[in-house]
Image (cartoon, rainbow, N blue to C red; front, side):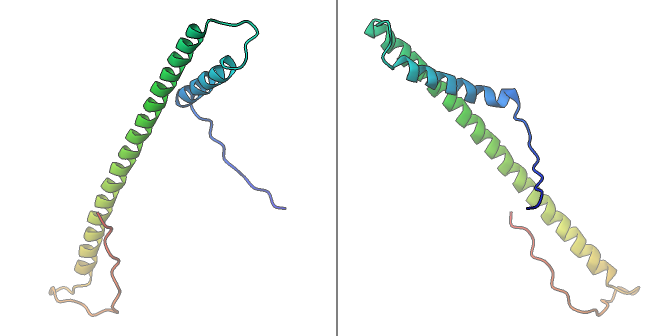
Length: 121
């Protein structure tokens, strides 16, 4: 077999902190709801579980909002790049047309080349 080279990039601690915390909270819920050696008052366990689930939902919501904001930013950047590429395409087309005219401004006959379609905005 051949050698396969893979680039691994470590995720920043800040980016993984909420995911790690969610894992810890869910693990705590799982462990806390197993049969305990020392029985706790039911109300206290229920309050702890409620608070933990509430914290999980808050973290999850924040992660989803952050992801949605990132996706929106990427979409805006792609649209801006498409507009720039379209403008550059038009400039190149105009430059080519100008270069194909003779000194008197008359078009020079050349082999017809199909122009690429501009990028959709």
